[in-house]
Image 1 (cartoon, rainbow, N blue to C red):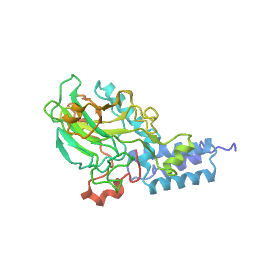
Image 2: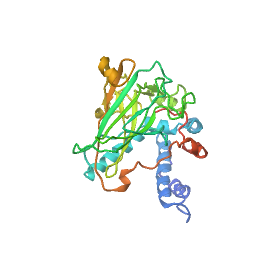
Image 3: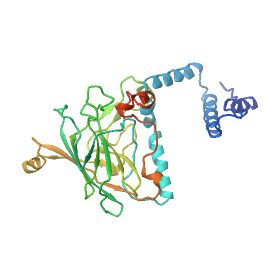
Length: 326
C-alpha cells in the first residue's frame, strides 16, 4: 500500500484536537507529550502500513500487560530503565558529579519497610535449606576513600528458585530484605543465600514481546541495593554474580562491568567458625563509593510507584508489579 495520509492538513489538525490543543483545561505539558506520542504512532502506522489486525493485536497485548501488571517488567526489557540511567549519568557528568559506584536499574520488586539492623543482619529465614550460604559484606566510602559511618544500605534479592518475598506467597514477609546501617567504619555485613537467576514467565505478555524480537527474557543472579547517607548522592544499583551464563546477557540491561562481583567459595574451617556457620559458604564483597552533593533532592531516591509495606495494602493495586520478576 502506498497511501500515506499522516502529513495531510486533515490529520495534522485532527492530532491537535486529539491532544486537546483547542481546549483550555488540562495540563499543557501533558498535551505536548501526548501530541508527540500520538503523532509518532500515527506516522508509524502510515510508514509501516500497519494493518487493522496488527493494530488490534497490539491493543490486546497492552491489555494483557496491564492485566498481569507487567509493564514494570517490560520496561527494563525494552531498555527504558537503562536509558533513564544513561540520561542521569550524562546529567551527572555535565554537573561534574563524577566518581562513585555506578548506578543501574532498580527493577519493580523493592518493598518498603524491611527490618532494620546495625552493622550486621541475617537476611534469609532458613526456609531454603538447599541454597548455598552467602556472606555478603563491604564498606561504604566517599569518592576520596573516607568511610561513611551510619550509611543506610538497603538490600533485597530472590531465593534459590528466583522468587521474591512479598510477591511469592510461599515465603515469609521480608525474607531476604533488610536495611543495614553501616558501622563506625562504614562496613555492612549480611548473612543470606546465593540467589538464582530467572526468566520472565513463559508465555506471559512480556515473553511474547521479547520473542517477537528474537530475544530471551533471562536475568543473571543479582542483588539489589539502595545506598544513602546525608551529604551524598543516593545510589540505586545492583550487582551481578560472575559466572552466571547471563551475566553479560541480561534481558533487563542492568549489567555494568564494575558491578560484576565474584562469589568466592570458602571452605577453611577457621573462616567458617569465625562466622559461626555449619559448613562452607560463598563470600561476596561489594564495596560502595558515594558521590558528595549538597542538593537535598539528590540525597533521596526518586519518587515512583513502589510496593508498600503490608500495612498499606489499600494502595497495592496501583503500586505492585505483581507477577513481574526482574
